[in-house]
Image (cartoon, rainbow, N blue to C red; front, side, top):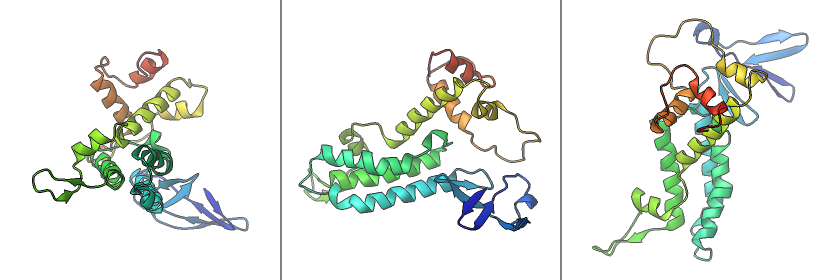
Length: 228
């Protein structure tokens, strides 16, 4: 539920399409408007439990920060180290707020890399071609060489693993842990299964060649203090 001044809003997350129909209700003298999405503690929540709108909102915030400092990023009066620090302390935090809980697909990772490369091109400027002697934009591989810090996707994965370790060590006394290991009732809907946050964690462990995956075994690995 969200309170905005004298306005009250609520959202219902359900797989039932009929349950998503918008209607309002009244309790005592207060009216509650049913909505499909709203912001809670800065995070965009939707009735379909989709992370897409949140990532779109974060990229929008990143663009606002980028345009507010773009003259500094291309300034010849500042060293590249300073402009990189501006990017990492002003723009990146606006994009990555809450990224520990994101479930990313390859398409979303590509969108994030496109955003970062656009900012880095502004930061490093164009390059003169050795053959044609014309100025051109830097290629992605050239940006990777110039920007020695981990790219935005690697930062998200690193933060996600730290959050996974935190969840794994919480124990059953914490609500977050109980919610995560809980199994929702009902049958899985038809169609391609939605990409889940735990699936991202499992993919990272597979890359590290960590054992055989059954259930939430990464939680036991995390509490053992091994790989997380």
